[in-house]
Length: 206
Length: 108
Length: 219
Image (cartoon, rainbow over all chains, first blue to last red; front, side, top):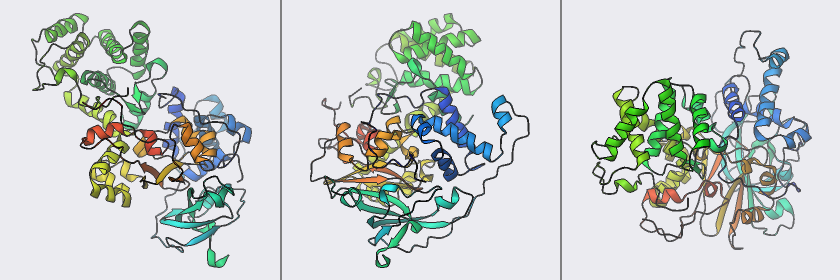
């Protein structure tokens, strides 16, 4: 989805603020959320569902929320949607039903089958799905070169929505700054993005 | 207790009680600091006290203590162990004076 | 802390070390010794248990894993080659079995090429080798700007790159995790792996800084 989470190239967020000697967690609840997420992941939801639950936050909330607030939101959302907990239990803070059975399935990874090879020129599709995708907006409809061939990995676009398993080759595709940003100050600088095979079109087909 | 849960509890120390880190890494400036750290963690793992009790003791020690983080840590550990009855102030003082007088071989 | 002296074996009281104190321990150290020896005698814990905890937190979590890998790659060209070809295998060689489960890719900085890592869509981070990410890495300013104006971001981190150095930004969008192998700083010939490890910062392995040699020379 074309959400506010897709931040590459956006303007107006100001300089990067570095906190000196930052502690790993700022308060106890952050650590609790991290532990919760780790325990629930792969039992009740997968990483793509988790990411998409964060992306579905209203844009204003997303920008205001701290990192672990987003995590908490996603864990709550998914546990409710998957009926691991009920809204009543969440409000009461007490369980009123037995624990749910783990629901997530584990798919066996098949051998790699790749359409493209290192050095191939590819163009990214101009996709604008309303669901989850890992093709960032700033890299749609752009031409790049395959640098490495990896995977297969599960296609996030279906894995986040109960579909698949769609195992696909995933390529590190290199784009020049000029291709991505127009007249970039340093045109030869590059950005490499890991892109699933179905995000790409071979150059001879364009 | 799994390492991950332990990580979480240790990482939980925040504010003035946060562990000294450089570049995200725990920093011990001398072996005794590491030993004091390790003792507190192992004793908690063995159920001698809940981690929250140690943290409360540490925050108290920092409030009343000097700038040296692990000196406060050690004070916190000792006073907690005195309260739980594992050691007495007298036996620690006696043993420490023996170490200072070089009457004992170091354990680390 | 900006010195290279404080490697993990450092202890000014043990420099002549045969396991005995040449000088008396100070009051605090004596108290730590007293406490540990009493607890050992009472059978509450063992020395090995403390060793295990200290070693775990000093060496097995956080950016220390990445730093050890980098220092080994700086001193052993064959290891460097294996690390760049198969990072999980190279992690296993050093005993980092847990970290080796991550599909890690190591990016080599070399003269004329500087790599830097970001995740614009969320906050993917090679935590298995670098620990948990700093807040700035997860922030909107870093995620939005690292891909479109990496040199400005780098200069805000105090890392000014000459024009003839090419910047490669890696937007981690898949299951792969990226870590940068920084260039070994000049003036470190003959340094031990342990001394070098102390130079490798977390930020240099994200690619927003370069390792610096402290102005005071190492002990």
